[in-house]
Length: 431
Image (cartoon, rainbow, N blue to C red; front, side, top):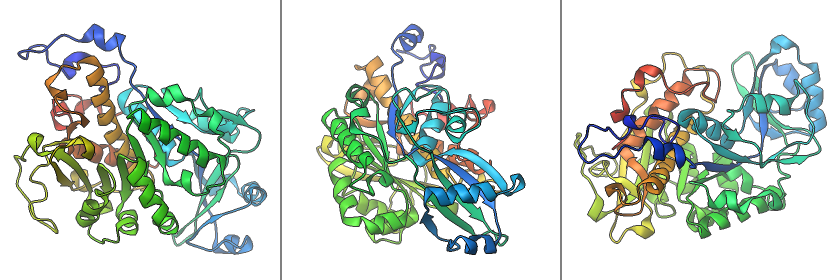
């Protein structure tokens, strides 16, 4: 489950099995696998307020708004301690990299901006303290100014209203995008939010990074943001995904905004015309994965075959995902899984469940790149696969990690999966 982290090789390559090679020393010597992400670093703050409080500041209840930094500072100064529910290191990329590093017990690299000076207790300090030590912050750009903040106002009727103070989050200069770091990555992770303002420095940094990744055949993973953003920049994002993206992650509303399809399977099928692998989370209905495999390597499921909007959609769910360009005869493959154990009995916070699922997918993609470096002649690499495991197995893993986040009140894992599941590797890894 923690491959390619620092785990004993017997968990993944049983020495009693015929033809297996002891890899303990090789794992220790060549463990240089990591992923890189570009982020608008911010702090998530959840607070309880009255409707009158929102009206006083001209905030529309139930909407998402960008506020002036001075207004946000004024709001925060007025809040009592008992009104502040929680403060988290936030951002979809930051959450995903943190969760990836917790799951793998291994390195990831974060690119973005952070305050050039910080002191104990301020927001930049809290961001660092609440991020896994395996997430490298060495390549962040120091900038004068305040950390970005995303405030979630919860009114007595439990309605949520979101406001963002941008601070320095968009100031990443292209000069701070390290070419060697990108080229050495197992994957480059970005979000559509980075592409919203084409005049912002972080937009140009992102375009530089994805160009390097494409040249180096490093998979580019895009998480979509919100349906409103997709509607706002629909044509641009369609072209961007087609030109640069290998894996697109989204929820059902974002999939509908991108494809125009209400049905998740039909949406996934259509989005596959733009990219190679789709992770589609559908709340209480679980998640779908849609991808490609060369017909030569297609493997039929040993589970029951299902038909929904696509007949026998899961027929080849035991296949490992490939990039379409590497398939001589590409076949679209699909899988669906319902929430783990029906979902938690009490969901405290849905924030971050999709990021957690994506962290599991990234873990498997990194595992494939890592294993290929370690054992390039392995039968696992007779073709250029994108994932180490079948999409069916990955969906199980992603589903389980999402459950762990849903059962807590934070978008970031505080630990890996329970120790009792260390022996259940066959549920997640297709060896």
